Amino acid sequence: MPNARGDEAKLFARQQAAFGTAEAAGPGTFMALPFYSYNVVPSEERNEDDAIRGDAFPGDSVLGLRSLSGNMVVPVGINSFGWHLRSILGAPATTGAGPDYEHVFTAAAQPVIPVLTHGITHTRVGRHFAQDSLTCTSLEMSARKDGQRARATLNMMGRAEAKAGAALDSAPIVFDPDPVPVGFQGRVLRGGSPAAEVTGFDMTLTSGVEMDQETMNQAATAAGFESPRWGITGSISARYTDDTWYDYAANDTPVRLQLELLIAANRSLMIDLPDVRFAMTGIPVEGRGPISAQFSWQAVRPAAGAELVEVTLKNQTADYANPA
Image (tube, rainbow, N blue to C red; front, side, top):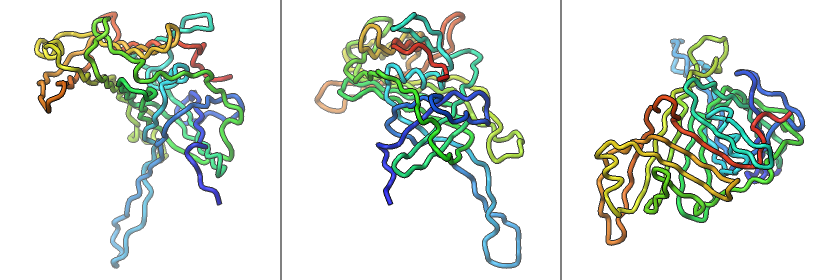
């Protein structure tokens, strides 16, 4: 009997119309998304009833609450990554008439929580699963000058998983082409100008969404999602060439940070953080080589008319609506 293999697993995704009801399977209705790993799995509480029965045997096993949670790691494909941005930030504002488009994602003050249906198919063993009512609770990205393709970690949360009789889509839509920038194609800008001394960039965007497992709905699964509350934190690793980064923290200076992953003028990803503040960090001396330090930052409440974060994706994808 053959074993399932990771390289033959497939991930299908579609935006879900309403919490609690998975999207129906059908050819050409789901996106097939590339991924490095997928660890979004179901969990269920199982408790022991402690009623006294006059003997030393364990109590009855009682089923408890069920949910989905975990993370998936995906390539920052210039076309496919917009789907993942939509899963945490919602639909973008899109301009362009083709073949080039620009999508701008922002963290809304009163966001609508995106809800997804995912399908996992293990082709070698012919097993299929449907996961409903998923949303992205946080997005983690790092950038280094290296030869590795850019990737992101998405932490997901959802209602339930069920077996499916077949793959959710026999003819899914794929993003083709889907170029992925490599590490050395990235750069960090400070106040709109490249920061030459930066050696690393880390960012975590959290939505603050939580499962509602308290509202009584006669089911072991959640009744919905609780409203989000944005948070953005991260760090900059930089060579110690002057006191610029140190003074940002000491003086509570507002700083505009940008991460750009550039393949071409019309194929790029730009993460724009208009106002971040740095935490006080010393300069460690850990050897005889070049001195570097890591400076932690946090995005603050935006000024009136400004954005907390703005992600601009330039690519060949017309929109991030569901396939017909």
